[in-house]
Length: 124
Image (cartoon, rainbow, N blue to C red; front, side, top):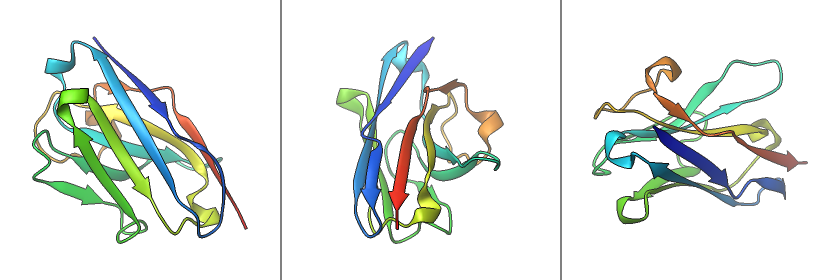
């Protein structure tokens, strides 16, 4: 089993920045690709960004390209999501996910482990 815990969420004004962190514990060797998803009230969970184990490949949702950056520090078992130029449309609960697969993955169902989520609220 792999346990994931997100941190860094909160309230920020439009145009501001936040950095989310997700630290893994447990059988961390069994997780490869990591991803960040978000779910706003009344909407489906959607991919924000995903990154392979080496960091060589990343993929972003069109809505966050150029504003968000995903990165990871494998020595710390931590993946990050730097979010800049935030808008109220970015308000959601952000979830960290880990997969045992080694390619970029955009589908929530192909992730094996999930964190409890970190709320992010962007005020106008």
